[in-house]
Every structure is written in C-alpha cells, then in structure tokens.
Image 1 (cartoon, rainbow, N blue to C red):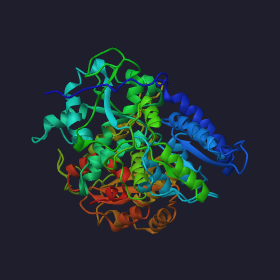
Image 2: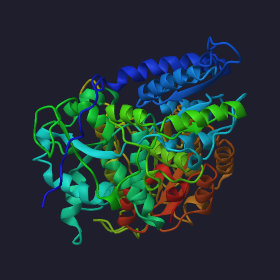
Image 3: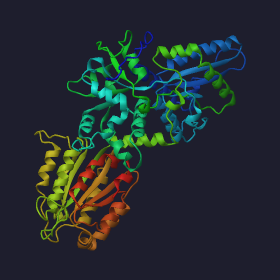
Image 4: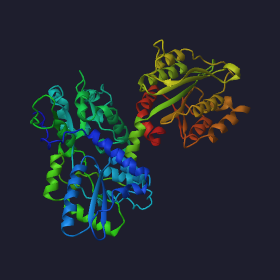
Length: 591
C-alpha cells in the first residue's frame, strides 16, 4: 500500500506572504538594537504613556510566530489597562539565529525570547558569557513550548507520482533512509537499497540560519546509530542532503525541486508548506498545479518538532512576574486560533521536543560547518629512490610504490569536490638549490584556465612528471618545512589547510636518510610554528610499511597524524572517510 499523502489546511488571509521580507525587516530591526548595545532592547521597553509606575516587558519572537505574539500582546496590554495596571508588552520580530548569536556572544538580551526551536536556546546557553544587564540563558528544559510545527518531507504535487517509492520509504523510515547512502551499492546485502538511497537528495534549510535546518541535523544524528560507526553514518547522510540556497526558499522552493530527472525532496516545517499552498489546498495527494504535498514520517522515525520555547531571560523579579502572566495569556483559545491561522500547532508535546545536553547543539552545528568547509591541500609526494626495493602495497607492477602513490592521488583528485583546492610538489632536487619541485600551484579542482584546462587535469598531467628520485637527491623534511611555510603564507580562511605527505621512505628510510645537518632544523621549525588560530595540519601516508618516528612526530606537532599504508583498500578507506575526518580529530587520526 502506498504512502498517505496530504496537504496542510489553508492558512489565514495574507499568511502566504513570503517569510523572506519579514526576515529582512526583522534583521534590520535587530541590527539597530545590536548597534546600540544594551540600549537597543531598551527601545522596545519605552514609556507606556499611562499614569503611575509604568512596567514593561520586551519580547523578541521568531518571525514565524511574531505576528500572533504581537496580537496577543495587544490584547494583553488592553486588558491590563482596563484593570488599571500600567503594564506594556512590546514585541519585536527577529530571526532566531541572530538573537542566539547575540546572546552567545555575551550581549544583553530582551526580557523574553521566543525562538523557533529550543536548539537555539541550547546553542545560546552553551556560548553565553552573560552580558551587562542580561541573565544567563536558562536550560531548554525550563522553557515551555508555546507553539509547534513538525518537520515534513514535501514535494510539488506534480512530482508525487514519479517520487512515489521514495516518499513511501521516507514515510516508513524518515531520515534513516539516508543511512545507507554511499555505503556501496555493489554489496550483496543491500545493493539495491543503497543505490536508491544514493540517488535521492534531501533539500533542507540552512542549519546556520534556520531552526528547521538545525532540527534536520539533529534528526540525522539521532537516526545514524550509535558507537564507533555513528559519525561515518552521519557523514553519509549529510552527503545525501543539500541546503536550499536563499533564492530557492519561500515560493521558489517548488521550482528548485522540479528539475528534469531530479529525485529531490524538501525537508520543511509544516507551517512553511501550509503557507506555500495558500487557500484551497488539495488533499490526499491530489496533483493540483502549484501545490506541495507532505509525507509525515512514522512516529518511530519522526524528528523533533520546532517547539517555539518561551525563554525568560530577565533576572528582574517584577519583569519575571509579568512574563509569567503573559505566558499564561498565550494559552488562550484566541491565541491558539491565531497560531492555527499562520499554520502552527499548539504547544509541542514533551516527547516531540529536542532533548540535548548543554553544548550539544553547538557540537552538531560545528560538525555541519566543518563538513561544509572546503579544503586547501598542498600534496608533497616523496618518491622512492632509484634503487628502491619491493613494495608491500599490491599494485599492478611488483615493487611499484611510486605507482601506488600516484594511483592514490588520481583516485583522491577524482573523489574530492570541485571547491577543494589542491597543489602538488615532488621531493627532488629543484631550482635554486631547493629540495623539491613545484609541479602545480594550489587551486580549486573546478577552476578552468582560459584554454579550458581544469585544475584536475593540470594535476593529472603533473603526476606524470613525478619520477623516482636519484640517490641523495632532495630532502623529505626540508621539503615538508618548505611546504608548511608556503601553506602558512597562503593560509585560506574558512578552509581546512593541510600539507599531505605521501612517502615511500618507511621507518628505516625517511628518518635515517634525511637526518643530516639541515633536517633537525626543519623538523623543529614545523613543530614550533603551528598556530592553533590559523592551523595548518600535516598528514602523512607512508607506503613502505612503517612510519618513521620523526614523520609521526612532525605530523602530531601540527595536529595531524601519520598512517602506515599496507594495502590499497586502506587508501580507499581514507578517501571514503575524508568528510568525517573534517568533522572530528578522532576520526582524522584513527588507525
């Protein structure tokens, strides 16, 4: 039996307005407050204009529900005036990510903050240093939910037939569908399933800016298993997910999912789909033009909801009492109706709220940022001497350690993303007495010259120039030091900067043959020049069956590590784990 498809009910008049405009206005309003420091929030607390001692409460709400909260505040203020109280609640709309960043950075905050997800509370709490006039951010468990919106899988109705099998699997398994993506379609146990997962792409909102994107990351993490393989599974799931570009959000999300031959499904808050569909939305999966259908995962695979936590930040007892009274007022039937009109549900059930330890949201987000981070790599290949002996690495030709290294690089260049930057040096006597030859400068693999030659092709051509080096020619550690200096000079911000060393030296060769007068100085230079604020890591692959202690030490001194390569499967494993390596030092240097 096929999946149950449906479209959310129609929103209130005007609710289909794109959130982008609202977000821009809110961002400008918040920026004004941040520029003024603590006084920025005070602008929202201005004089009430009534007699007696005026008391006020500043509330910053996510744009997704700011309209309903503002309407509730207007009713609350009127009722307070009617009762003779000089109490005013003032509401400002602001993106949750911006407010979380301000709080985590130590800026003072409003009296009450209502983000779209308690993940932002966890994030702000983890980084909060407590600014002047602001209290510590409370634990998410102490922030009651005032509204909710579950995450759903959604596609244009016109695509539901073509994607029926995918939608059925998503309904049954949720994000777990992605757990086998890239795991190897050819294995006997799950080849067909893996192949299906490999070609499916989930499009999610940006985790750096959206609570829905953050919750999507959390859902993938929760469904990636446990133990030593969890990070690898999580990485495969991330490879099958792609962030919707800002221009693809709002009303443009449908166009981004309808390309010919694409198998893309969006992960969106139910509220967003409701607003996209507007009035007269089709139900039960009817393929009406312009409508989006939704698939809700089975309860056992459902992700946490957007839970809109009511977060009291003020330490002032009087303001806390007003905040508690206003929170109770938000539970009114009138406010519940306003929330339904903009596509939101009532307060999230306890079991549907994110539950995280302090700092865990930051760790998940940071893992994502590292995953998205591009690399800048200078490859230093140390070919065997002309009189080199047989290799333990099985290749097409006996004793061909050089062939094994070149094959590894060819595989690596083909596997990496276009935005990854690579350059190539070879340890060999070079110009002006250098211990190396510069075969290709560092550039993005996708860069193309005026003649139409890509950096990938330039690197492949450069690999053909690598030859076994003459006895006594060049110096491995002097070349490592030179490569390290080069990468420090050309340090690329917002990238992982790496010197990747491939050597045929072995435990008895690389250290012993180069430990002459200049080599000790080169080793010391690399070890003492590491800068944690601008890290350049040395990663070494030794193809001679043993890693020289000096090579292991120089890599370790830069936060990198060295691997002994015994067979070609190890090389493929390292490339398959390259994404996970970016996210965790433990994976980076795992055996």
